[in-house]
Length: 287
Ligand SMILES: Nc1nc2c(ncn2[C@@H]2O[C@H](COP(=O)(O)OP(=O)(O)OP(=O)(O)O)[C@@H](O)[C@H]2O)c(=O)[nH]1
Ligand SMILES: [Zn+2]
Ligand SMILES: [Zn+2]
Ligand SMILES: [Zn+2]
Image (cartoon, rainbow, N blue to C red):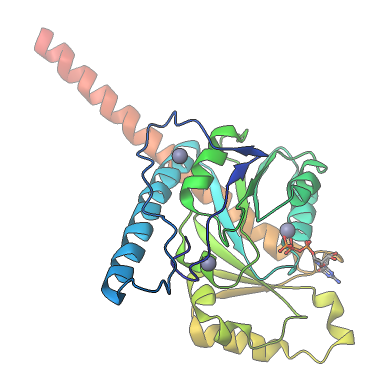
């Protein structure tokens, strides 16, 4: 169940396959029953306890994902938005510009493999997670998708979450950052109506700016609303169809990939130095 809206889980499918093997040997006794957030007969204290258990379990899976990604030097972003903001279109455009060999994608939708099919058509690898009745991806699903996704060392991993401006805010997937996409057809006030999501994100992509000449949309007001809930949020104005703003977006992505690769190299260097020191100690002990 979702701790935010109480919706059911349904049957999760990864690339069309329900259920999954547990090579990683994790305990699978989820604290996710059929309980509903507003379940009659379940007291408030019990509900809070269940929410904490679900989120704690998710955070443990997220940390495992984060460790795995760091080991590979993979920069991972969790793309969140309401349905139809342009996430998949933006991903296709990004892959076209960045090259299909350096990007891999995990797609989240309740049903269909439409989005993964669109990504695969670009040449980049993609895995589709269908959440059934679920309203968000969680770190456990992403961990299983990662087992199947061909992911090069130093790659960019884009996780397109289920279109929903509420529930995905609470679930860490192991990403470096959440990126919220707001399209100019949705109204300026979404950041103050759905503040949790805009607070959780480090970057807001204001998409579909090519449509601005046809709308009465106040870009400054939208940015001011976003900064009211998250003063540190960075904003890039883009159009996934015309390509406007893509340079700045690609610069952001390349900088993140370079930082992540450098951190991995540093970890490897530290480990090598430690191994050398231990070998020297061993030689001394033998002498
Ligand atoms: N004019 C314009 N249309 C866009 C832009 N980006 C996406 N669209 C259109 O918006 C619609 C939705 O785009 P998608 O990429 O499917 O949006 P999404 O966020 O992936 O949708 P879900 O996965 O269903 O939540 C499509 O008709 C796109 O062609 C843009 O920058 N400008
Ligand atoms: Zn929910
Ligand atoms: Zn599992
Ligand atoms: Zn999509």
